[in-house]
Image (cartoon, rainbow, N blue to C red; front, top):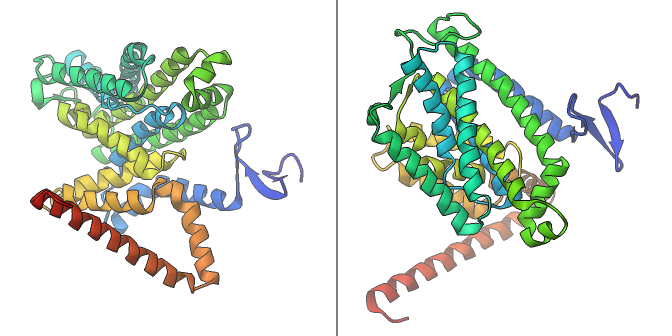
Length: 383
């Protein structure tokens, strides 16, 4: 095949080179999925209404998913669990609101730049103090920093307490590229600008995790002591990854503020938001690049859509999430290859379906038996 052709042979298989990425290749199936994903992203404002979905909710889901992509750099490669990434999401959102409300900055791109700078600065400071810790200590320290920032904003007149701050200057939407837009035009320009930046950031993340720095993070995640012995500056590299992770959250929070045009502490800084960002990464598949993005869209949509349909809307969401954890432990995107292979085997051998039914029946029977035993012990105190 010619050098200009995007196709090449690798280990006997044909793969597609992705332009401008220096090494990213996809199988034909992955290429089709990627193209479908890009088309869906760019067509979302027009396609969502056709199938009865809310475009603005999906947009917010993408933003929280982007924060989860950043968190995933820590979770997947250094195996560190952060319960405090809402600090960077909320920090970015409040940077936009403060600049608009107190300093009357109306250009959206300047506001977004301020969000990234402030959120990244927070990550620099917090990461400096937590980079040397692991396991539960790392998780609790990030949680504590998150709570300190939340309490400061929640109790501060400067941030207007729980009522939060608006992002409009003089009652008008921020300008974008120096131009004032109608409400619909503002939403569309903001969305498409965000999508372009988001795709660039995803490619940069892919380059990062496949660079020597990314390999070093993998080594740190596998065994810190061994990584230190081979010369990797463990704490410094964890700190760097923490900062990059925070930058992604700050970007997402800044766009969130520009989209909502009002920022409050609970939807952006509360510790539960950190838990949701973490769960988005697990739900979508933290072993994949785009899994957290998919998890963000699904979880945000479930949370916002069911809130007005059920009094106890967390219950059905919990059931859905339990089902995914039990039956798709690699997350949605991480399980797709297994699901595809399983469906292919069952298409060629339908007799396997009978084994599946028996397997599910056995699991349910064991679960009911264990639950009955537990209840009996709790009530009668004997086994």
